[in-house]
Length: 108
Image (tube, rainbow, N blue to C red):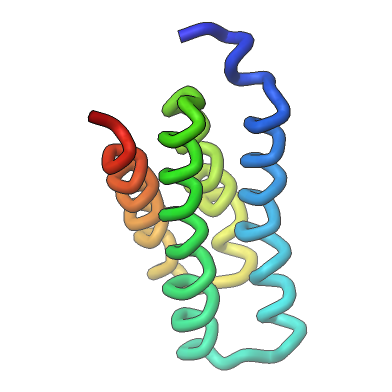
């Protein structure tokens, strides 16, 4: 693994989209005054799960370093306590697992 691989435009895009799904989507959910069930359904199980799978498939298809897959779960781990209750901490493991499983699908 080359360190230069971690500082490419593709990695920066992964960081940007990870920040959007970790911070901006929950802010939108908070401004729409969604109840807890809608937050879990729409944000945690809807958009973030889909993004985790797409991120894993993208990183695997473009042969980007697997370390990029840690970006979204770490960003989510940083921001979850501002928008969600304590149970949302466990979704970090779900997102991490989904990204690596979808990454593994693209590899032989």
